[in-house]
Each structure stands twice: as C-alpha cells, then as structure tokens.
Length: 398
Image 1: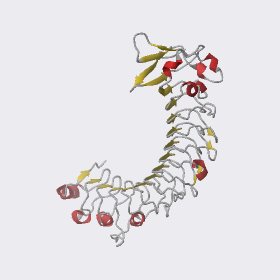
Image 2: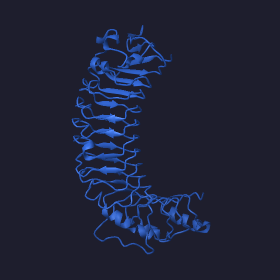
Image 3: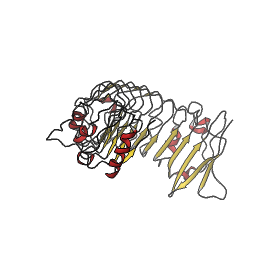
Image 4: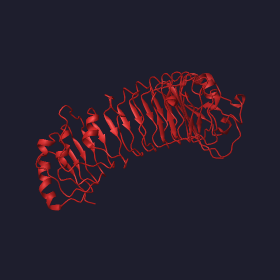
C-alpha cells in the first residue's frame, strides 16, 4: 500500500480540502480529524480512499468525524487517486457549500447524474486527466451555477446532443486533448453565457456549426485537429480569438466575415491553405494579430495595391515558414500601415529593399529574420538603416 498525508487547510475563512494519494491496496474507512494543537489545519488519516470507489463502498462505510465542522468547505481536491472509477456521491451530499471540485488523474471512467445531483452550488468542476470516454445528456443538469467545466485530457470520443443543455451559467468549457472526431451545433446547445470553448488537440474532422448559437463566445480554439473545411461561425457575433492552426485547411472563404469583434486569427500550419495575403487581410480589416505561418502563402512579383476603401489594423503579422524570397517584400506590406511586429523567419530571403521602411511601415518596431540565407554584405548595410528607425532586428543564420 502506498499513501500520503492529506491536508485540509483554511483559506480566507473557508476550508480547502486536498487529497493526494496513490493507492495500491486498501481496506479502511475515511476518518477526518482535527490535528492536535492546530485549529486551522485538518488531516485525513493515511489509511485512505480506495473505498471512495462507489463500486466497493456504501455511504454507511464513509466515516467522517464531526462533520458539522466542515459544513463551510468550499474547495475539495482529489489528485492522483487512480482507483476511483466514479465521483463519490458523498462529496456533494455532505459538503453542501462546495463551490469547487477538482478530481485530477483520479481514474474516473463514468459520470452519473446521481453523483452530481447535489451540485447546485458548484462553480467549478475540474475532471482533467481521467479516463472518461463518453458524455451523455442529463449528467450535468443539476449544475445550474457552474461556470467552469474542465474535461481535458480524457479519452472522450462521443458527446450526445444537448449534453450541456441546462448549464446556463457556464462560461468556460475545456475539451482539449480528447478523441473527438465530430462536433455539431447540438453538441454545444444551451450555453448562452459560454465565453471560451477549447477543442484543441482532438481528432476532429467535421465541424457542423451552421445552427450554433453562442452569442457571448470570445475564444474558439480548434487547433491541432484534422479539419479540412472551416465551419460557419455566423452564430458567434462576439468572437474575438479564433485558432485553427495545424489542421488540413485549403481555403478560408467567408468564414470569418461579419465577425466585427475578431482581433486574433490563427490559421498557421495549414500548408495546403493557399492565400492571397492582401485579400485575406482585406476581408478581415479589424484583425490585429494575423498568423499565417506555413500556409503556402505566395506573393505577386510586383507590389500589391491596397484597396482604397479598406484600412488594415494588423499590428502583428506572422509569415514565417512560407518559402518567401521577394526583394520587394516591404512594398507588399504597405497595406499594413499599423504593423508593429513582423515575423519573416525561416523563409528564403537573401536580401530585400529597406530604404523605404519609414514611409511604408512607419510603426514597425521589430522584424524577425531568423534562419534566412541572408547576404552578409546586405546585413552590414541594412541593419544600420533598420536600427536607425528604432526597429529591433532578430537575426540568426542557422
């Protein structure tokens, strides 16, 4: 048997329970006691917790001493208790004031509405790094005040339609590092206050968001998936940050048009996404951070002419790893008068004209030229010109 002391401490007048154990073998009951001589610190005896597994233990076997003393507990954490297959029902039954429940790496495989039935006061539920493989409708219905739900790093392959319906207070939903293949509008129905939706690092191929209605969503992260076609985002009028890096995109189309609040757009590392830089920026003039690294971006041989009726607000532009080599690169970027930070690293530049940098890019503060085959003679001439305009230059040839 391996186990460790479990500390329960008061924080800002409330009690926080921390349970951290690795259980190899155990038979015994839970026994919460006040540590002698210390009124603010409590311990759970080291003979702990495989009996928290509902398959093996009934509520009668969970012996908690002087439970009235813990009626104001607001945080309950169980970490690395790998024999736990479900959320113990006694936690929310007994700790009625609980606001935060964290069960990380606890071995949980199943979620039931019974275990969460008394969770109306929960504000945060963190179930990261467990073994949950499916989410079914109704399991979260009791959690009417929940604002954060973290289900990252599980093995979730399926989510039933309307699973999150009823979580009318939810603001943050984290589903990173799972095995989802498809998500639809019905997957995330009934979340009127959702602000952040993280779906990074799944296996998502299909995104059907035509009827998605998340009016307050600000952050959508779908990076590191297998998406080929961008979804409709018309139901996300408040979207500010959109991440679709490391997918299999071939075009952007009008996916982000009309999203007036959008200021960060990242579609980097989609090598088959062949874009016209000026057209892409003109479609989204309000974007201030535009990430287009490794997108197969090609520039015309002559300087682009910016549309007269459109002014780009881009301040940070990432064009790294695009096989660029045009000597008139700065003229191509005249459409970005507000540009402050330019990343041209890992391209094929040997040299380019910098004599008009002050007039073309008057607000430029830094330029990254790392890992370009730059001509040393050109560097000796160009660096003083750039530095004279207070532009920080990052250079590393290899």
